[in-house]
Image 1 (cartoon, rainbow, N blue to C red):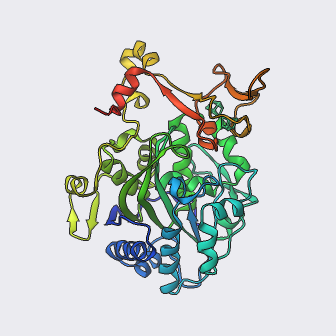
Image 2: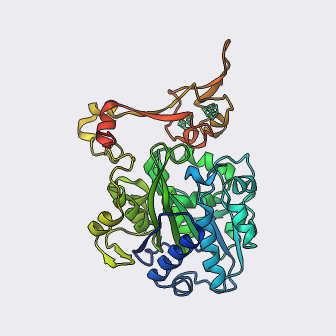
Image 3: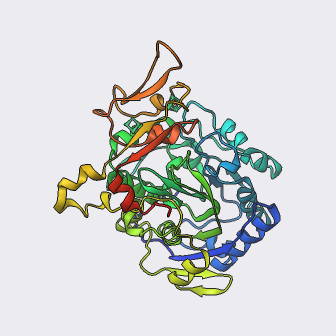
Length: 409
Ligand code: SF4
Ligand code: SF4
């Protein structure tokens, strides 16, 4: 596993390749091309800190948040996973395993991988599932927010990680891309506790930046062919963005994601902490596409979609501090759509607050449904993230919605 040394990311180069289908050969061509534009796999993996050889133990880490089918756009699409596996194999990297720590620690990783189509893709390439069902404590004294992590067994044993993330929205951090995807390296039952310990978006982002500095994936490959907008990271709406993006710098990669969806990178806490803590940078982006080097404006024109539904308001960056009386008018909170709720209690299990801020109320008539205790709620949105029925949404005030510019006219 990577050392805890705090160094600036190796490159702010981001390769963007158009791909508008999950047809396997097209995806493979796009992934291969993007990595080639970045400098080629061998050159990327064998250079810099924690260089990897053909014998190195490599973990392919897709996003396996929940048991959902690939067309929901919640998890990394198997075609992208397969293309990355094929790229590694063709370049002689054969000591491969895959895995992730799903949001619900009560569900086996293998079951989630099966439903998401990743297991079938991995089995077809003879890539075994790593051990993500147990954890080992790793100290990180240099961490700004966290001085230790309980990492999944396989992450600790690995020489390097290939981060195969998904382009999605996130209620706490606005987006979940490359930087946030490393949270799946943390052993399952400790993830909920992290939300309680690092309760605000900013502090949570600092912890995620520490984690990136600890595990340091060698390469980040983003599945943005069909992204997720709106009520992400599990209950949002699939949205075609038609891109595969690749970088060694997760902050730069997430910043390009932001630009493409008309979101300022500085509004994303994981970008801000990522830059402050030396994970990467979006200051000197070097965007390279099939048509050569591009400016941000050219990339946005070519690949962007400003109708993408994402939180764009400034509320969490402290920009409204001087006018505090406006803050209640910008409030947002999770709410249950009772007509969709089946009373399964997964949200209750996901809630990291001691004594719980959500419970399932048995009705005298009709079906049980989840109910909030907003006095306890820390607005971490773990419940919303884990609800399998898309029954939890985020209610925003009128002003917050105007500021998010999500109005469709
Ligand atoms: S809100 Fe969702 S997770 Fe919670 S009980 Fe209802 S269906 Fe289950
Ligand atoms: S109720 Fe939901 S948003 Fe509130 S603290 Fe619990 S998990 Fe977080």
